[in-house]
Image: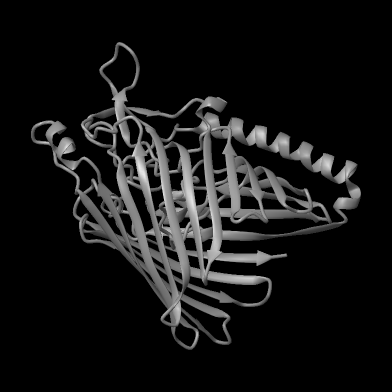
Length: 434
């Protein structure tokens, strides 16, 4: 989950624009190459998409950001071409956002070429793509790929929680295990609140902006997964080399200044997961060791300590068309004694073992055209929580209406959900698919 340190409005814009242009050009070239030079491999072309209007209002009065949380019109076009040796895919969003800048922008959500080699034993997928793995339901341990927390908390469709990333993904099959290797040449941070739409909580003493790793290949990211079935369970091992996805470190913003700014410390993660059937349901287990490479001794209060994190979950159908699931998430800070000893006098200490529990209930009614969903987060250590309610109705195969709400609670502005206590909102979405 997103932690308390946040970005400001200017963070990453230049990098995102440069990355988008690079991805668009690269994907256009790949698509042209695949479709023109390898025409037999891409015989079928499909086009679909949707047009959607989103509107959301805050239920808390006198917010500095105003009452309107969402007011936007979005169009999405998907172009896919399939063939014997692979496929090409393009997903473009055209968004007119009346809250952020009242301008129309185009975002390349996906744009990749996928092909197979060596009798389908090697698969390569190159271009812009959302990436996800792990077993958590809206909780993440070994999934370090970028998230869009602004969209998640403001009421956009859940697909927008995953932010796109430019990557080369390689899959190797027919070994004792399946290998997934993801190479990301440029670090892509999480999209976190900037104070424009949701509350921005800046740690005390921070007066400068956020420093992100440079856009060079030396500051890229690498993720690895080895997976296979053992008995009836799907098991996996994970590795990651990169940076904390949210800016959790503090240091001088520039030489010869006293201004403090946030940055993304170096991070490596080593983990494992298992998922299988039990007790007429599905269990999931996941764990990861977060190696904070800049503070392995744990005695630098301006850099997060290493930690051991885990998720344990269980899901089952409890009645006809009614599914329930629960999860327990924990973060166990390593070298806690060194961390406490290094804290400045009077500074509040974080919990050695942070916990979070979730509950999801989903019910389908009216011939499964109406979906009722409730998802709740609660942290007994942070004493904060977040509730998500959604009702969606498939009016027809083309038209879908969704109405929902986000509720936050917490006494401290230093916790994940407590900082959003003034951002309770209700929203509606109307989508026409074609």
